[in-house]
Image (tube, rainbow, N blue to C red):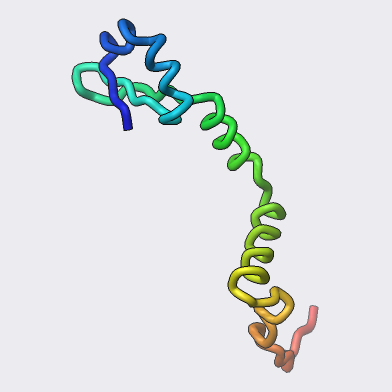
Length: 92
């Protein structure tokens, strides 16, 4: 993690921008306290893609991982997990 004070960043901005493509992010401080983070375009786009995932996308990824890498088929994962007895009386 690279960290620069605001004064250093002002004086070295071209170099920092060049380095961002390699390091991904640079932290900026004022009086030793963090105040901002500069991100490379690639790093920012990767974060945007992660946020754009829907629940369906995440579920599909988990199922694929379970099937390919762990060897568990999602059809058998929850078999017998629910209580099947329905002997309660119910009336409106």
